Figure 1 (cartoon, rainbow, N blue to C red):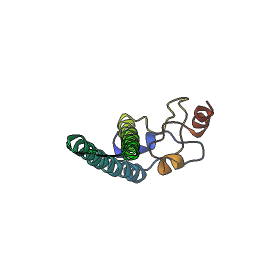
Figure 2 (figure 1 turned 60 degrees about the vertical axis):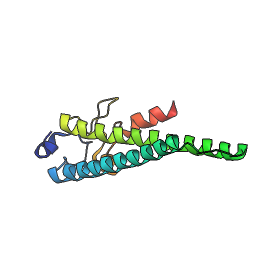
Figure 3 (figure 1 turned 90 degrees about the vertical axis):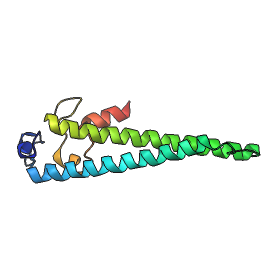
Figure 4 (figure 1 turned 135 degrees about the vertical axis):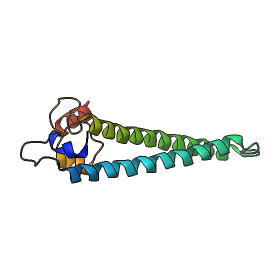
Length: 136
């Protein structure tokens, strides 16, 4: 969707339609976030590759050191998975903008809310559906 067609995106009752400037600002934030997340992933992958190729890594460690290193690896992997998820959500938000479906709840189809999307541009659910999802 072109930024000039921003007014066609769904908004909640009482909200003003999206302006091209507002949509461009949100898209710009998402694009910056995508680049930051990609850089984080590259850095993390380089660190993991370096650890895996070091032949003397852990040689002579006592069991406590081995456990601490295993914990650190698991922590690093969890952060990498989270970063991948955030990256995918940001890319999905831009895809939704291009498709003209940005701002519509993926569960009920109602408008998510312009204010919510300006604060959390990766949102795919309206507040009601998100609350319902979190209760499960």
